[in-house]
Image: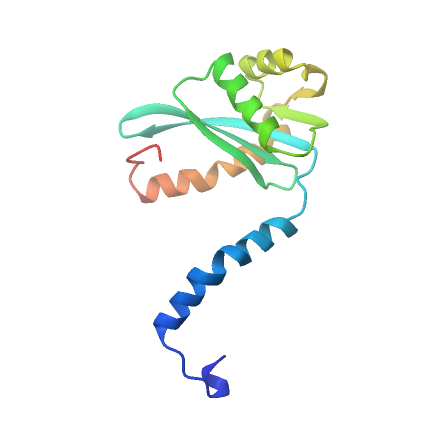
Length: 151
């Protein structure tokens, strides 16, 4: 675009502009981002990281936008409670409906948080949004022949 107008710019100048203005542009985009929907879908998947079996917990909204991801060694009520507390703290939208895959630890964690009335334990297609969000991780895992670290 600049060369078309007769302006000669080096790669170093473009790199400098990226470092200088990139964070400001990213902050503006984050600020303009639409609020997540109040219908949340929670799911977990098993994965091997550095030869260790771990659970990746994910939350997505109704639009399929990822709300939060956490990696835990266990799939119990304590891990679910920690994930949901973190999710509620980081989101500025109060959930109206929380759809899970029927795992009992999700129900136990929601009961401790007082959100059991919003819980909809889904089967098969009801929690498809969360299950589809796992596909990108599976693709990346296959391409890398397994993850090497949790970071």
